[in-house]
Image: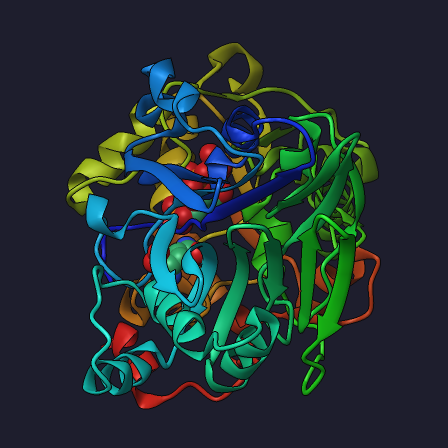
Amino acid sequence: MDEDKLKEECGVMGVYSKVQNVSHMIYYGLYALQHRGQESAGIAVSKDSKIDCYKDMGLVSQVFSDKNKLERLEGNIGVGHVRYSTTGESLAVNAQPLIVKCKNGEMALVHNGNIVNAGSIRKILESEGVSFQTTNDSEVMANMIARYYKDDIEKAIKGVMEIVKGSYALIIMTEDKLIGVRDNQGIRPLCLGKTDDGYVLSSESCGLDAIGAELVRDIEPGEIVIIDKNGIRSIFNDKWNRKKLCIFEIIYFARPDSIIDGINVYSARKEAGKILSSEYPVDADVVISVPDSGTPAAIGYAEESGIPYSIGLIKNRYIGRTFISPNQKAREKGVEIKLNVIKENIEGKRVVLVDDSIVRGTTSKRIVNMLKKAGAKEVHLRVSSPSVSYPCYFGIDTPYRKYLIGANKTSDEICEMINADSLGFLSQEGLIKSTGKSDQFCSACFNGDYPMEIPREGLELDE
Ligand SMILES: O=P(O)(O)OC[C@H]1O[C@H](OP(=O)(O)OP(=O)(O)O)[C@H](O)[C@@H]1O
Ligand SMILES: NC(=O)CC[C@H](N)C(=O)O
Ligand SMILES: [Mg+2]
């Protein structure tokens, strides 16, 4: 894993229509899911037993800037992907959808998640004569499904689900079917929507909203949902379906206008801010957020504490969500380009600064100093999640453990390092409470309690 990356995800989208071409719908859906991955984008459609695909490096709008590329993708079933790599470099060859040969011709697959035993499965498949076009883990799943696809694809998928370890929200397209799959613990999200003439699968419900589809429900852990000309049906790989949704989806990844597993992301973030205020109250004059993802929690903190909310930092909207830079110095400069202070709102004031998470500490260190330089009298940092102390092996590109500030420093040490007047992290109990659900989450980044055993090869990420 590249030590300079922050963290993101991948977004998947699939549309089945009885009557119309779907590439435009997938395009707009991916546009809404852009925050989940900014490295590459692609769309594949199926028509007359033939799959057409276009993918490249860049944002959705850049990859499809020439609208002819979209026009040429004709078909009434389609899948799309926005990628942030976890396994396999960030190269065009690793962009998705992946197209592989199978029983009746071809199938396309898009994947969000990370397979922790992909390396050993890959070796077995290679020894059986399977050749790979990419270095990513998603192709291991695609090739395995294709290989076991003898009579029906559902059986093949079920078989693969028993062997593959890790997290996956998959959408698979064959010549006549659109299939959604969620891993046995539902670590990564996937939801189902309905249009007038068909169905949609999307990583988040904001992808459905973008194309006017109605949210029907979330795909269950271990569920395989099959959409074809006969309608929709599901089968279950019910071996271990114990829900373990990635809590970081709720804290940071997902868009606040999404609903995931029945959790309204905006409300959960706001509630986290309220709980944070009761866990770590402070006398102050103003509450400000670190935009964008810290804003709902800051509003909650202000509401609960009675301290007025104001805008203290402006984010340059032309800078991507996660600022990726070649080295730490550039990354620190990056925070200054990305965020700037509104001096009159903080000058001479005791400021409560609310962010959703601290990973390396780059953002908070820089911002506290920016605020002090601009005249803030005191800066009290409040973080609406616990301290990130363990790496993720299931799709979140958190850095090596040695770069995780929470793995190496106590809260007091972090406070001193970032030059804040006080620091408070939301408790794990407070975080779970903010979701309004019982504990059905993977919170391994905070407590090291991983949802499955991680094979030796998976741990290589942390070496
Ligand atoms: O401690 P650090 O390593 O600096 O990482 C934590 C920061 O990164 C994320 O924001 P990001 O800039 O990725 O996106 P956002 O604009 O959506 O908040 C997160 O919201 C924190 O602000
Ligand atoms: N972030 C993701 O979900 C990435 C999917 C897949 N592991 C890849 O590297 O392409
Ligand atoms: Mg942020």
